[in-house]
Image (cartoon, rainbow, N blue to C red; front, side, top):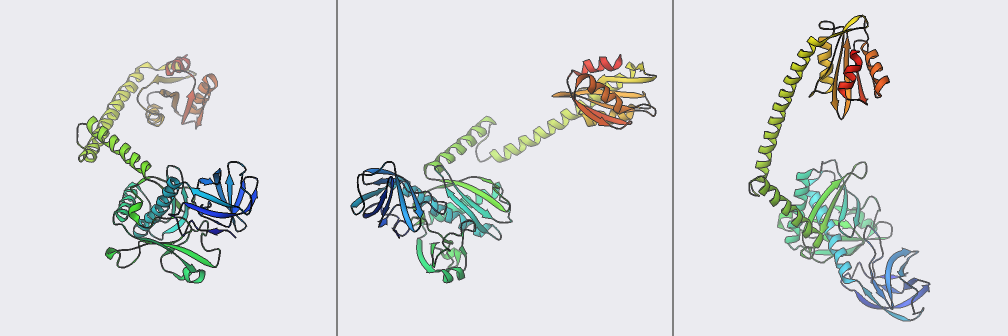
Length: 404
């Protein structure tokens, strides 16, 4: 059994140990300060003796260090290890930030559960189980509370408890996906302390075997990036710490300043100005739609004067711009039987479509079938009314075809 020291002594990055076993590129030591990948935290990087450490994994109670190449040292020798301090610090900050974020979730989300966690190179994710909708406003509040706790410089501690005792502890969060920390006889519990505003309650308590900082102020700024739904009952919240978090904030603020300058306002008034412009655009869209409707209605009225005789009936056929197939269908129904026996109105929205209607004794669906047989596309309906779309010809070409 390897004596794993990283979780208990995360600030120690230089050490010496006795080599227990060497198997090509895999090395087992009697003790190690390298963190083995587990619980969503990646393996440490660094140097062991004369070789780079490229991976660290648990295997049958041992911690196996995978090196870039076979080492010069052998079993029984003493070897020096050096953990990559920059990457270790990043993981300590990122892992502790996830606890701070979960603590914020405790105060905002109902029936909260912990469904997963992962530290990536540029971002970290926490999966929440909760019926509460995590919308944009909620993301902002999660970020605010997390950064507030970081600013308050709360202590972070870790202790080991008997398993039965830990399972009885109030407020303790267990990873429901990995059941981290509850497989053995003891459970390692990480706690972010509370303050007077928490009425003596800690900010967060969780079963966790990772490496953490000793005070939340060491985390640095946290920026929430986005949310997603990776599975039923889960909401994934992704965030960044350190330089990635700062860069994201810089990008967002630059975009906000550019938007404010583009519409001629300042940052504080930007939301109100955007809302005003949205209302103005909506009003203009309604006005345009109304004008298009009037123009289309006028065009339909013109078509009453352009009927042709075909197949023993009066046909009203024409192209009408500015209306969709359903609107044209309504116009066709109004005209059929009163102004013509068969009405076929053509329009275009990317591809040509046709809306037809027919009086008793005539078949609107047959007209659609005739058009699609000639020009492609598909559609259908009843003898009274039918539609076709995806037609491979311009509306004018279809009009000429139907009038002949």
